Image 1 (cartoon, rainbow, N blue to C red):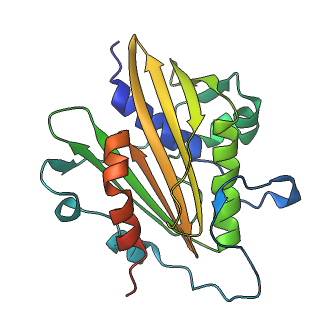
Image 2 (cartoon, rainbow, N blue to C red; image 1 turned 90 degrees about the horizontal axis):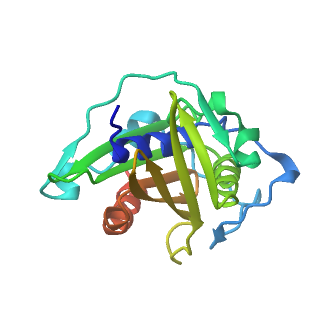
Length: 227
């Protein structure tokens, strides 16, 4: 069976992010770029509701011509197994099937671009700064800590290579970024994934590297706009 690599890549990327959003305690040392510090001395903004987050997602008018909403895929419950990366395996392959972080306040949008297989996905979450930072930091540390590994999702083996990327200063309080290459069936797809925490809001943009670079700043501006 021929597997469409772009869809497989974004699907697996989302799956790997689907781990419980729990505190990791003192064992986890966040390796993100910190432009601000988590502190109990400053009162955090109240967490936004899912409907409020939905209104802050990019839409076709923000993205420009050529972008179409990607139909929501039916919920899948394929077994996901990670081979060659103990840190990811410890997070639990069974947890890697929901496609989103396990925060109750969340919103997501997926788009395709033009006639090509280029895709871009945006996710927004809201919770305490500490919970957001620990959850996403744990996942990025695990994924970038393994240069190569394999993911078997629904019986389809996908070879993955990961590379930690430098982050841009001045965007949010913390940032994480990585470049992932997914290879299966003789085809390869490169996916860039960047996460930015700004106070009690977490933005994740994934997809074609050019599209992520083009729309990341715009996504952050809309997501953090007051009102």
